[in-house]
Length: 353
Ligand code: DAU
Image (tube, rainbow, N blue to C red):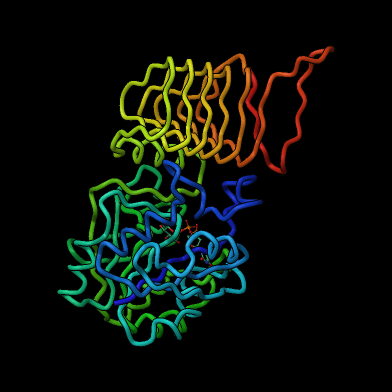
């Protein structure tokens, strides 16, 4: 069995971060999202993995490499434009051949992994197995209408959802899916939808098995979702201190990576302080990921993700529920007249008090 990870797409809902980086590489608890998917796939025993890439191919390659660091073998598959999940399957036929495969959306996180689900698929051999989860806003997802154990209908982002069962971004298929992706037509949003391909399989009498999961799952397309994922994953960390702590209070689950320095500060977990980060005269509150080389000085940060190389100095108030990009600098200016000075990327968002 092979795996196909989808890591193309545009990431429009996470701009401006995704102007300069692939959304699948935004870190959750200081680890790129896509690594969680790769680890889940490896844990299920699959080592032959195709990664569908688009414009951000170079970055994904730089981060994942040939896969040997994860114990897998990676084949990169170029998709010329994000023409839909079913299109991504179509362009991967050469790699997948006649094998069964699990398709994993590179921006999805499933806390409990996929091992039992892959085992179930291997054992029972339906043509396809889909995962469903109950969500509060089903209209943002593919939605399934069930009749007992049978799928009645699948609709992509319906305005009036018939249920609260969303399609999770992990699917299992055998080679009949290639007939489906070739038969369907682009949807109203101009994409070849995997949801339509699965509906085609059902309509033609192939077996598609639904599996409702009850563990935690997230599609990390938006800021709130990233922060929630960060919260959940940080809570699973095992506390550890490889860096140095001076005159500081550390409480709760906190990971302090090698080379990090926490001086005259208070850190309340769950939190992670990345390699070489400097926390000085500062407060780092629960559910915060401080990236490698970040500086937090004379400031307070809580429930946030601060990416590599950013620096936050002498801010009066507390930074909360924020995602701060790589090498961003936030500081208090001493010049007179006192004013706000910004240099913000396209679509940045600043909330002032
Ligand atoms: O997360 C689950 C949802 O994923 C399902 O409920 C929906 O039925 C399914 O269509 C999908 O919806 P999204 O609109 O969230 O998909 P998105 O465009 O965000 O793409 C998901 C991943 O696949 C993302 O990592 C980018 C990648 N991708 C996307 C497209 C459209 C590709 O690699 N190629 C593509 O052409």
